[in-house]
Amino acid sequence: MSRRKLGAEMIVQKFGGIAMKDETIRMKCIEHINIGIEQHKKVVIVVSAIGRLGDPYATDSLLGLSPALSADPAAKDLIASCGELIAASVLSAELNNYGITNTVLHGTQTGILTDGVFGDAAIIQIDPSNILSHLKETDCIIIPGFQGMDINGNVTTLGRGGSDLTAVSLASALFASHAEFFKDVPGVMTADPREVANSKKIDSLKISEFLSLLNSERPIIQKRAALLAQKMAIPLYIRGIAGNEDGTWVTP
Image (cartoon, rainbow, N blue to C red; front, top):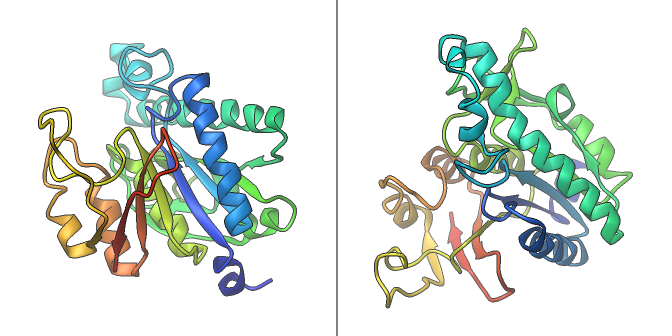
């Protein structure tokens, strides 16, 4: 099975911390994963850590376990990476319980090689061979986002919002048809709905238009990820986690 042929039948889905927050919302994730498998045959899932600051397994909560972590970049990245691994394990078990067989790949199993910069690493290469091998045996693979390993085997994280970069990088390496991002809003909006009551969803955008919307403190996806999507001509689909209505297509 060639990578090009597989890509035509495959998508990458990315679920953020809000989508992973509790069992009720994760059931929505499972519904979207099931639909993704039905429509595209193969789905690679990228997950963020569960919840946000204050939730026990959120990245910021883990980083707050000891002030000593701020002086030890390697240890800080190692503990920061644990939130995504916990999320991947929980989602995997719940998918199995729902009857969707899957495999979790992490660490060297993902083939994600970074430049070794703790806290803000760049992905320099992805060897997709192990992922492709597992996709011959299962239709669903879960990969913890936000991280990779350097040439010395150190875990390094990809900066704030780095799970988005993981998703787009994998979509590129696997020649996926597109990458889907599930959010707590129905798509890209004309304004932040938390601040503007009558904001409306935008049906489609060119990537150049989308990039101009990401210069904010709370961009809908990481700008580094969007820039990579632009460079590699990867379509993005920004969707709401709560339902199945159409989201926003961001096209090359």
